[in-house]
Length: 422
Picture 1: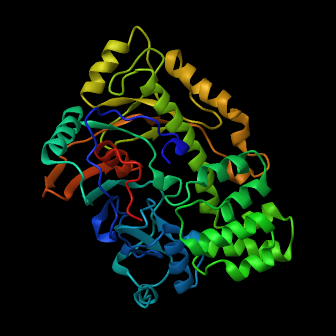
Picture 2: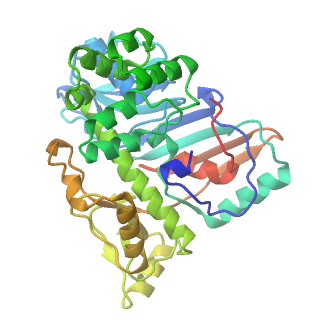
Picture 3: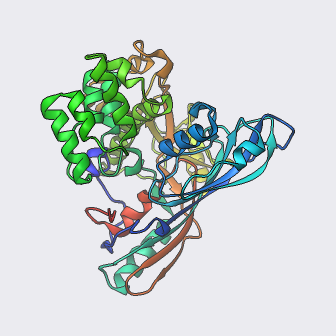
């Protein structure tokens, strides 16, 4: 699965410990470290939302339906894992009384205060994780070896994790590529059909039927009710055959953007994997690199950076050791600040292999979804990781800056073909 999403290498050498994560949602606790808007007598209610085993887009839709408002009007800073217990702040353009009356299974809403400013995407500091890896196959010595290696490295490669692409069906990046290429039929059919072993049998068989028959009316009878977004598209195509673009736009706009961002994430993972394979360092800049400043806000993505050359390389590497900046790789898009030297060659190689160019990301066929190019740091510091092993389960606690994936660390520890227990 990891190769399909562009992750092809490990940076640790120690033997993995195996095991499984997310056996229960309680095994994966995510607590957002938030940036709070200022209190005022404004139109938004700021609330802390705790959810158990809720997929983010479906949670937003459910909240919006309960409040009779648009999903796009609910503000949140970051997308969280589904099979987990997650806590984050959100903003709602409703009265406190109206929000108090919302009752959703496995969702707790703690109303905080009112504000004139909503919560914006990306406006968070990071997330604290409390994770249990269960059914460890390795012994205590192997656990110690890999954990001590990680502690010594004090960083992790900043791959986009499998959650970005879909755990049971890692296809979001494929859908994104077809949208980019203006191939809406292929994008839609990849999303609603394209059966992949690993999904539950009912969903798999429904997708297989639609893939083979393209009978949208009959498929509606087979698709489980939980596949809300797929059913929405199928309903449209049953009434309006071949309206592929219109059917796709039945989805929430943020989900369409997620498809495109997933493709950008796939390209980033390919670039980072290629850098590691070629032996270029993660915690040191080489000529041609672009470094991103890493100050108090811990900016991991930016459309600005400093180019590394012979004259400034030594100074920049001193700053990297002090964690003031880090080397970056491309998140491919238009107006991309391009690396040079070996890193520039790697980025160009991946673009050629994928058959893409910057101009395509302006999305002339859907300009509202245009994707600007950015840089993303290739590694992030990992400090104060706490761990405990009880001969069968490994308990982990750590903090990651916003936009970083816990699974990028867990895969280095586990080195298992499938780290998930579902």
